[in-house]
Length: 257
Ligand SMILES: [Mg+2]
Image 1 (cartoon, rainbow, N blue to C red):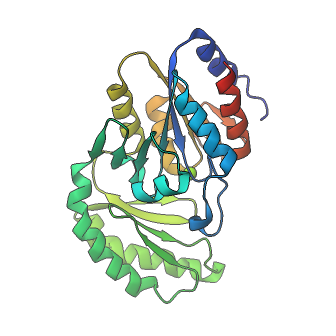
Image 2 (image 1 turned 90 degrees about the horizontal axis):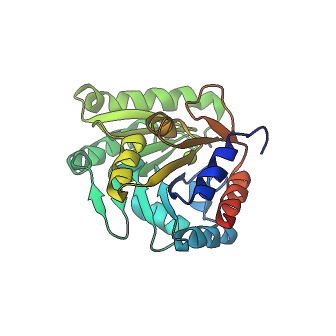
Image 3 (image 1 turned 90 degrees about the vertical axis):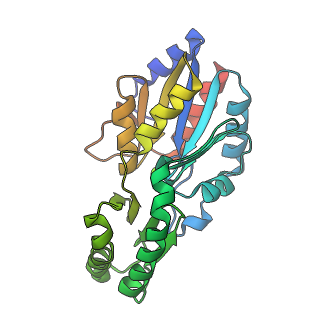
């Protein structure tokens, strides 16, 4: 962690005794990104850290991921905490269960677009289509450089009819293209919604690494503390750390206060 005097803000909030809603992205934030996303199981020390965070009376961890709810719960493997899957479209907390109506409406279209995507890019080596129930991803991290333009074009062609009719919206992440339900909803709005549900007195902290986290960085920028993992030039987050390892150290330190 370097040059993060901004984190002093976090320590002072903790010292003040305020309760903290701790929004945590999963891939690239709690675990390092790997070529095969199915291998990104939460390491044991991070799992026990999350359990300890959840057990503390003042910290309320919420994992927010682009993965399906079922997938992110399985990968993180911590029970009794709040999860928001599909970029906030599908939320399950110990006392709240919410699926955005647009997600249910989008499901038949996800099935249809999956068929088209298979036709368009199924033959390209390394391209992987992931049906996430209420959204769909096309991963191209393992695609050879020369084939990437074909993947991008295939995605565009397959998704065009759904995007034009404003049924599904395209979204870009790290080496992944996604289609999510068209709705005024994203990680940022889901985080605000959860924050309201938690009630007064919760100070929001949001930690994330990807483009989809920017909606939350913007939504929470003036309400709480926003932290970007890794570096790219344009981010709305106020502070940054370098790696998921730094996030682990930061969360460990938060427990001490
Ligand atoms: Mg991420």
